[in-house]
Length: 570
Image (cartoon, rainbow, N blue to C red; front, side):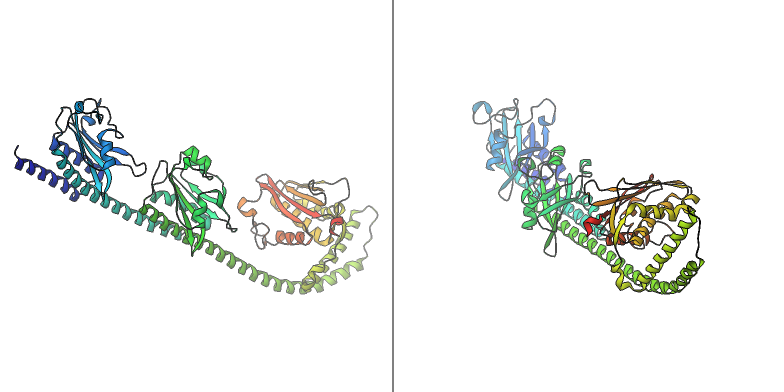
């Protein structure tokens, strides 16, 4: 073959290679086609294309042709021989006959002649084209320049295809970023926003696990809010000091932190997850709103990965969207709470005015009832229950009169008279008030007293109102039939406290309602006012006590009331 014919073949091969850039080929497919063109031009019996993995810095096979594509051929050793030499020095190399040199070892036992050229991009080796023959003296020194020319054109084509691929990926990522931003900003509740973030991260980042930590008010520690990517993260909890983790610099210096291999660092977070899920690389990005860091967003990979500038920029942009969504959710919740407080205050104001009017209207007929009752001069034989009933009626009329007086003279409500009171007889008197209603509803009341007197410092009328409210609530929960158990005792841990438990066998309080059960105007019953337990809690607090729901289920509810003993209150 003449020199002109050889040059024409070379030009045709170069044109064939360059045309791949305009056909919209996938880069992985293009590498295989490029390799076939070069192997055909030189008549190579074995060919491979190897690219340097940016994460490991090592050559890895991307495409093969000829003998290396079949079975039984030993895999080429890319870390020795001329492939490694070319990859290291960035210069083409030929070994015409391995039997005449000890400088290199052949890539496979049946190949006697090999040639390789680098794929160069801006003075950096990004890969190697390697050709081999079974016959010696096939790779000639004058062919090296031709292979270098073909490799250079192949690099230009691959660079164009990779660039287009990256642009397409960026376009998809930006589209996902915009869609994600709209999705996050459209959510209102803070928990709803936080729960949505990890899943969105895993959509746009090449990660296996995502985690979001928020900064505590003290600015010294982080708490895991939400994580996704593996079942073992369900209900996973973690608190971190900034000085103990690589996440600290992300917060303190407001910059992204990349850890190439978590297995080789003394990283203190996610240790069980890193080990069980074989997490390797991490990118941590601070979540910043108006120059203030509020948390950190992490993505983890299952293999060693070097995050490029594009990935880092994308992740930083996403973290910015998260910051806006989180702050919007926080502000929204504050607005909702503020509106609720305002409505609550308006209702309390209206209720106060209405209460004063009602108290004024009640006072006159109440005075008449008291006078008429006293004028009856009811007398019953000893042992007659009606005698005790009459005493209770007189006492309750006096109590109602005192309540009306306090409402009309609201500024003196804090002056309610407190005195030492034995809780056992106080409870017994309260039971007498509801005995008829208990009998009508077929409800059994079990009372477990205490062997010794338990005395508290309080107001008799208010304490009885507390007990009465709790008993009536229990009766409403039971409807018809069932048991109310009331026990009186001391706090085993704090001997200076009296403890009363009111337990019923009713339908229970739904879990979502329990945290609001003591709020004013909150009621689980259609006919309820939502004031009973709110008043109870206020009165308990006025007695320096505590009230709480111990448990509630479909089997019943238990309230616990604790009051300081008289000798501890002065």
